[in-house]
Image (cartoon, rainbow, N blue to C red; front, side, top):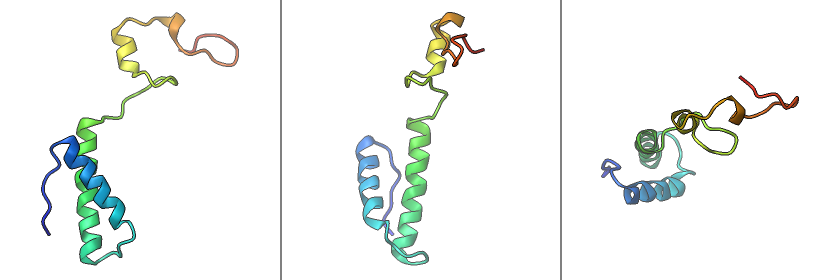
Length: 85
């Protein structure tokens, strides 16, 4: 099994393409084993390069709003129109 670490976006795209081609692989076969290893590598790469943080409903990372000093008035409002804490 010739598998190497995912270090670049190009490596990542190539791994995703190969994973797609292996999706119908049976478990406990060489293809199924390759799929398992590639998925593990992609997950590790994505965890590092595309971290999932807290986002607002508009897709803005909440951490950036906090760093910019967004106050109570800019927080999302509930059904009553009152800013949520």
